[in-house]
Image (cartoon, rainbow, N blue to C red; front, side, top):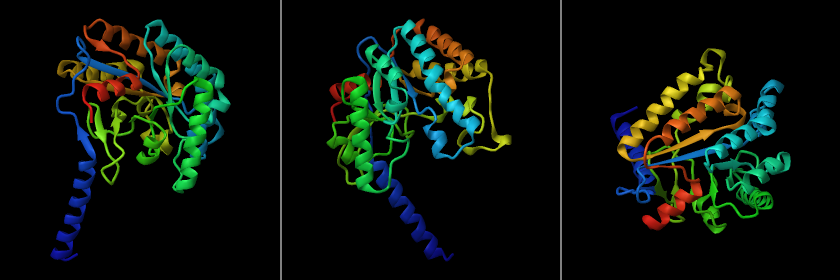
Length: 291
């Protein structure tokens, strides 16, 4: 590659990076409600076996996903409710057909039911994407009694805004809530960032995302407790935010439920820790830091 060609390529990459950066609008004076210094979202990606099917994984992997719908989701809901914590359940629309009782029970208890696509993917075809989102909205409304206002997906911001969504939770570009525009600088949504460092599947799921045997990690829950407590403590000292991305088929195993409960008990010993749903936090951002 010539020097001129390399310079041109670098300039193109720089332009793309700057355009991407311009779409993400941090909130420099982000503030929590009075008396609060730390917000913690506990979110459950309730995909059951759908993600496994999309990856054409073998039967034993599919049954791990099924465990989440039959057992894991119930264990987690019971634990969170014992501590008076409302969670956000991001779920594909098809899960409403597979495990409607679990979702209805969660909605009755006051947990938020949010979008996670129809079958855990967003079609490239725009008409099919719209069909998937509308089917998911209708399915979630049937089980929860209200339309979802949040998503964890790559759905078009224009489509999401048209259907009344106020937030997405799918970026890792920063560590506090922010606003995000589409590529044209429009259709602004609140973004509630997540990160794989506080995603249970990174630590507890063998063969995650097709990983090879040498890359598999099945850590002791005590090891993960220490890492997650360290992440929480760092943000607590700063006055910040954490969004835990959990999966019922992963964290619904007994020893991991116990680890999460120990984490919550320690968090609640400190003053000013707020456990909102994602909708609660997004509405706070809209009211306290209007776009």
